[in-house]
Amino acid sequence: MTQEELFKSLIAHAKEYGFIFQSSEIYDGLSAVYDYGQLGAELKNNIKKYWWDAMVRLNENIVGIDSAIFMHPKIWEASGHVGAFNDPLIDNKDSKKRYRADVLLEDYIAKLEEKMDKEVEKGRKKFGDSFDEAQFRATNPNVLRNKSKAEEVSKRMNDALRANDLDALKQLIIDCEIVCPISGTRNWTDVRQFNLMFSTQLGSVSDESGTIYLRPETAQGIFVNFLNVQKTSRLKIPFGIAQIGKAFRNEIVARQFIFRMREFEQMEMQFFVRPGEELEWFRKWKETRLKWHKAIGLGEEKYRFHDHEKLAHYANAATDIEFDFPFGFKELEGIHSRTDFDLSQHQKFSGRKMQYFDPETNESYIPYVIETSIGLDRTFLAIYSSCYCEEKLEDGEDRVVLKLPAFLAPVKLAVLPLVKKDGLPEMAREIMKDLKIDFNCQYDEKDSIGKRYRRQDAIGTPFCITIDHQSLEDNCVTIRYRDSMKQERIPVSELKQIVGDKVGFRNVLEKI
Ligand code: ATP
Image 1 (cartoon, rainbow, N blue to C red):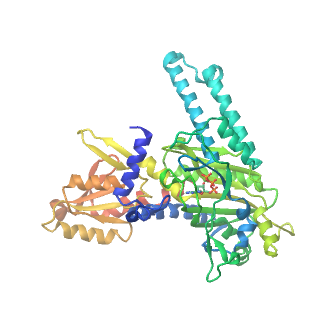
Image 2: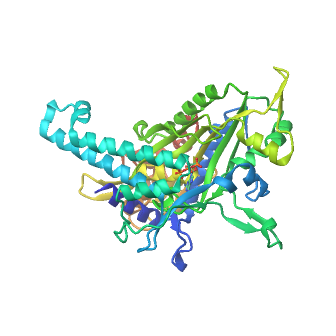
Image 3: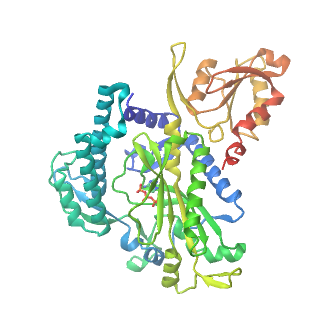
């Protein structure tokens, strides 16, 4: 199965089992907006808890807040979003489809890279064991030609984006002979800027002054509360403020399922430090955040850093943690050293002092900030896509299994009476009544035991227990493990301990 087919199957699976639905589906859907179903909401909550506990609970100098989505419109002028939160767009006149100019160019570069990889594969086949990939890449004329082309396009694109030169972007699209994937033509409009913020009106005021925005990031709610939190918590620098919440962006290229949505959730933390110490903290947070990702257990090779060469005007260092999604390595989290830009801007626009008095140095200053900003939905997709497996079993049967880490699984334990009579359901209910206080349990008595196991595999339940006639006599049940499908007999009294040890957050939080 190709990666594309696998991706399609997992999207279908997410719908079939109540993880993710297209928004407003009965009205033919709303593009790039999704609803989380009964199991999706559970999984999402577990991811949030993991992030919150790791950031807020384990760090005495980080506190969490929950600021409003609507904020004073001046905030977005101060932050630069009104003036510069734009995407460069281009339309194809024949298909009437709209694209992000930089995405068209990035796709073009990705195709060149694919060509290079294919050439390398050909070489590997031809030379067998004696193949030296590094040497091949350094000498093969086809690889070198594509590499130099990719570098040239990437440089021209970055220069044009940095200089906000929209004509140069269009010229580059023409020079690369990029065609519209729908119409196949090169009949392009000019490139123009499009602001990504959604706006609406406050109350009864319908003129310009009543325009407010749906926040495009949660960070500004932290910056404008910086002094409120610092004073009321009496935290001393260095300290952090964390928040989980919705953000809204009118994304033009909305694709790849929940990777790029118009309404999504972010988990952000702003860490306030002394000026001059920010790069040290930037390095520390890079390391800590990568550890957080790796502790989930999806495989260390799935993550990589992508350090930014092109820095935003307010940043003096920036990196992305990229994840190997089914469509390649893409940004999952951004870590930015934002200098004192945001707080200085708010001081300027609000007229309020945003300074901190440092009792150790006896100085007042505007703190510098390290931001860690991760997409909750992208983390969901990273986990879901890595854990989705279609397996062929030894007996020739197929099974779909979500190999979710136990601490994130929506349902931890399925309680299954072997038959619907002879007092087995009653005993099963009794066990469930006790355990559901500790974990999310599901009771199921319908269909054969095999079918019930498959249903639980498909939603990632790490443990199933079966209550049979012997259970009534010896108070033992059969526990079945999702990944190995191994079964063993254990006393009911030990269940809580066995399951609890595996599904708790302790094992993972200890690794960070
Ligand atoms: P991209 O370059 O992919 O558009 P970005 O650099 O604009 O992302 P940030 O502004 O740094 O993203 O936002 C922080 C995080 O929020 C991202 O790493 C990503 O996980 C998440 N995120 C941003 N935009 C979206 C979106 N439209 N849908 C889902 N998640 C998003």
